[in-house]
Image 1 (cartoon, helix red, strand yellow):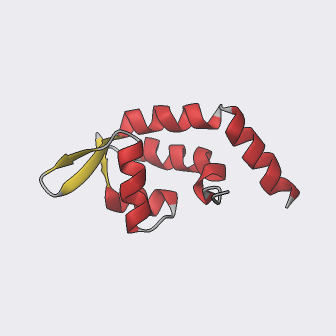
Image 2 (tube, rainbow, N blue to C red):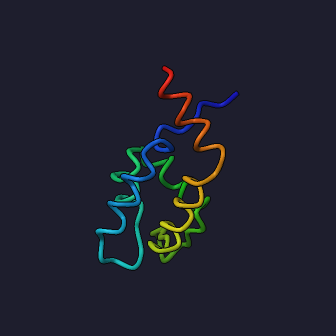
Length: 88
């Protein structure tokens, strides 16, 4: 079974950071910093969240990312993972 992503339990903090930004799009470097992941995982997340390539740079729409993170936070998988980490 693959390991659960650590950023999953920090979605509320991630959403708050993203809401504070003014930019309409997020690049890989910002995603790395906010999610606390490395370069390769950030690129994978950008594709998973509907990112698109502009030149050599991947971007993801900030508002779309926030909406998807809120959806993840309200899902049952998030609640299960949050309770599991609290028990540990």
